[in-house]
Length: 277
Length: 59
Picture 1 (tube, chains in turn red, green):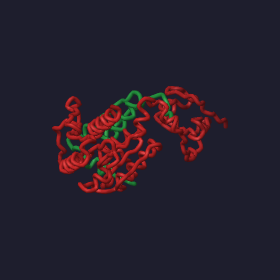
Picture 2: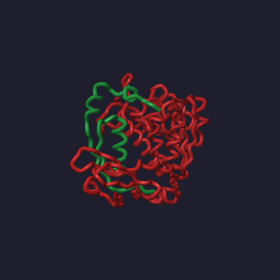
Picture 3: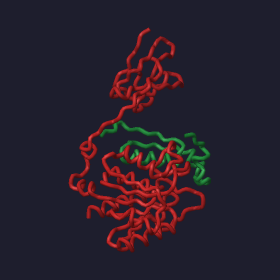
Picture 4: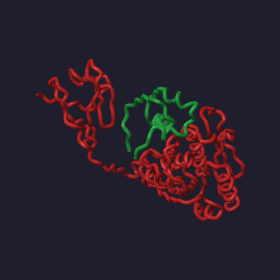
């Protein structure tokens, strides 16, 4: 029996040997198809070994190969310098000093938080009382194994995985006129990311009366799909509204990732614009 | 965590879900645009995504 070691550089379409053709490439695997037959198998790279394939294929007619080795869990170490290496050096210091509040972390808020964390905002203050349900996953930045957890806890886990160099303060609480000024008193800008109209109104009114000098970025109209051209931003003094301002939530039907994501990212984009003005 | 397909799609619009589930979408490149397109379409429930990119993610 002769063992064949797969070469490091493999491309789709390559013949690995006379039996195997490569039809796909994964991060830790090469997906092959048995030449001339509809039979697929995966060969695993060892992730700790910088992508080198260490699985070996026996080629004597029978399909024999050792089970994929259990990948050792590796903790990726990345320096702050490397993380921010391609950020614009003119704006980075301003962003790193900023504090942004996010009220509600459903479809809008979870997407705003992920974008702002990726950008590297110094500190995010996040508040929400809700827990994750299966039907949230069509648009919110959570994962199946997080169902049942409070959204703020799950979001904190995800944000730390995305950017461990920013500070995240979470509040698992239902926001009201009394706690809003306390929780968000140190933010430079507040993002309104509720889904219910009466909560939006309460937050905006509370904010504009408590902190008339600080901007609040709200959202209105993000249901359905398509209609890119209707989405816009409106300014009313220190109140900004992103969305189409037309579409309403339909009973028991969730908004969908693309349009929610667009509006959330318009809010995040506006946060940056105002910080850098 | 086990979750049924029914639960997962419970609040999708029943009028558009069958069309979405039957669709196949290709994504060329999986950087800033492609990775976000893929996540959005996967969340929405597009039946099949075909994704191609040649670079590795880097710090």
